[in-house]
Length: 244
View 1: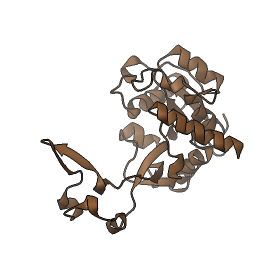
View 2: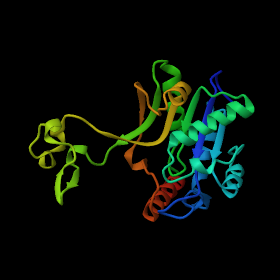
View 3: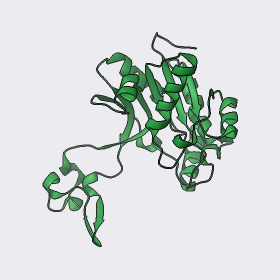
């Protein structure tokens, strides 16, 4: 296994077969390459990552993952491949499986979603470096500026719209009509990579913990594919990158 230090770093791509928005979304071709394979290749290019594991419930997905360089030492149990299954479920399963069957224990685990084909190796490296350089940090993740401030969002109660964040928190009678600059804070959305320490994941059952570092990326590259329009947008962005 390659690595630049003695820290064991495991990348896990969770790609189950069930997808309601687009059937078999994770292996749908994007510029001729199965969607999940973009982030497999990005992780494999990192000099820090020892192992890149594909956690999937289908042998067909496993075969495709191996073709692009992922390890598939197990198939994910169906109990962890449901609509209601969480990231913690399949990440914990992967860690326990490797410890039990191979006596291999990671220090840092990367959660690498198959639906973020724009994820760069640089982002993966940056999240890892944040943990390597800050022993107090429990996790690190990539973030991008959120497209909407939460103060401007709405919820529906009894057929009426109400501010999503109530006045007792915002202090504003009508936050939706206020200029963004008035809020005196930037807000961010998470996208693609999460790096988490083993103790935080396995002992605390968390992907964050109390001390979360961050790596900012351009929100124009913060895409998480869920619809056919997302595929078209990702294809357009990737084509422009390849041509530049």
